[in-house]
Image 1 (tube, rainbow, N blue to C red):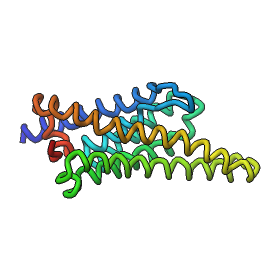
Image 2 (cartoon, rainbow, N blue to C red):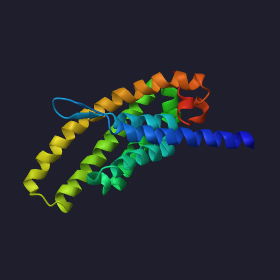
Image 3 (spheres, rainbow, N blue to C red):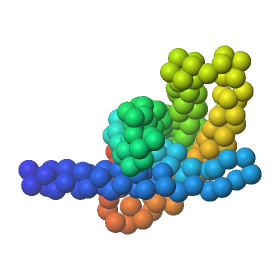
Image 4 (cartoon, rainbow, N blue to C red):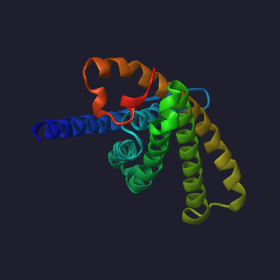
Length: 193
């Protein structure tokens, strides 16, 4: 009974730490010629890879929503961010922790990251379409060019996240194993390297 309580405490501490890492990663971006590369999407995918679908999704959504709450301009959409970023990590985590994903190892990580990133891009563009069409009510002929611009930067960010998240996971896994923490992470404990 005491060991079970200790394991739950460790899992909660790891989850809380990851929420903080997701939140802080939202502050980190790299300027490019076209846009900015946001590190947060890669960390959200990493949450799904480490913690699995549901828990990874909650962690990614909560950390991203907390970031939004620190900026008055984003605060009203924090709940949307919770859903979109959480869904990205949820999808990634479900694929990585599935029997197929476990058997695939690194290929499962890349596929999980890819499908998670594509899911996020679809949700992000849908949100923007709804905002432009019905909330802000911009002229209809300006919606498509605005969405294409957002799609371009989203694809760059998505590609960055798909490349970086599996690399981070692969780099962290040996350290987590040495520390005896990998068995506390539902998805990570089953990935073969």
